[in-house]
Length: 358
Image 1 (spheres, rainbow, N blue to C red):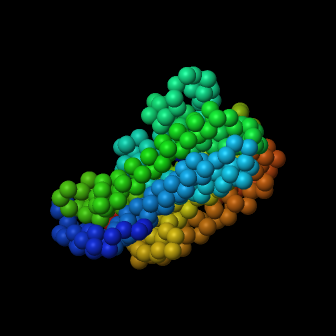
Image 2: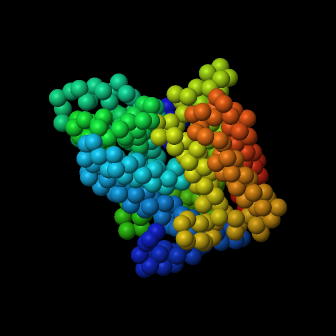
Image 3: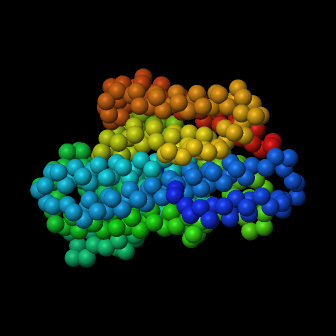
C-alpha cells in the first residue's frame, strides 16, 4: 500500500528451462559463493512473485467484467463487484512483501493502492463536464486504484446500495477499474519472462546483465522486502489507526475501512512473507528462503515459520471488524501487533544477518 501516512504461474516451460540453464552459469561477481542459490531465486521470482502478479491480473480482469455488467439498482450485480474486489485485493496484499522492481520503478504501488482517497478530488471529477477515462484518473493517485473503487461500491459508511449508484458514478467506476486492470497488466508484464522479464535479474543474479552482482545481493533484496512489509503492518497499518489520535483510535486512518477488509489485508501481507519464505504460492511448492536457512540454523528456521503463523492467527482472531476492535477490543489488536513486531525483529536481527554472511 502506498499510504500517505506511512511511506511516500503459469509460465512457458521452455522459457523456464532456458532461465534455469542461464542461472547455472559462473557467477561474475568478484567472490564466487560456496553454495549456489539458483533454485531458490528462480522459484521465488517465477513461482511466487510472477505467479502472484499473474493471479492479480487475472482477478482484475474478473473485477472489470463485474463492473462492466453492473445494472443500477441490481443488488446482486453490486455484490458480484464486491466479491471480485475482495478476490483482486487478496493477491495484491500478498504481493506487498516484494515491492521492488516494476511496482516501484513504474510507480504502480501508488497508482494501485494510495490511501486515503481524495474524496474532494473524486467529487470534483464527478461534478465536472469531463468524460471520465482512465487517462483522466491517472493524474491523481488518490482518486484511482483499489480504494477509490472500494469507496464507490461500499460508500463512506460501508452500506451503499445498488440504487444509490448513479450513471455518473458508474462512468467513474468503469474508468477506475479499467485503470486498475491496465496497471495490473503492466505489473505482470514487467516480471513475465516473455515480456519485461524483471525475474531474470534474480534468476541470473551474479551474472552479466543482472541488477544484482551476486546471488547474496538478490537474496538480501528479497529479505529487505519481507522486513519492509512486516514493519508497515505492525508500525503503520495497525499502529496508526490504533493509536494515531494521541494514543487513542484514529479510525479514518484504517486501510480498507469502507469494505471492512482490513484484517484480511493485514493477514495477506503476512502471507506474502510466508509465501516467499516457504517458496509456495497456490498449489505450487518449491524452494524458498527456508531451504537456505534450515541448513544454516534449523532453530531459526522453525522460529520464523512459527512466528509467521502466530502473526496471521492473531490478526484473524481479532473480534469483529478492525474498525470496532481498535476501540472496543484493543487488547486483541495489540496482541496481533506484537506478533507482527516480533516477526519483524527476527527478520531484521537474525534472518538478514545470516543472509548477509552467506
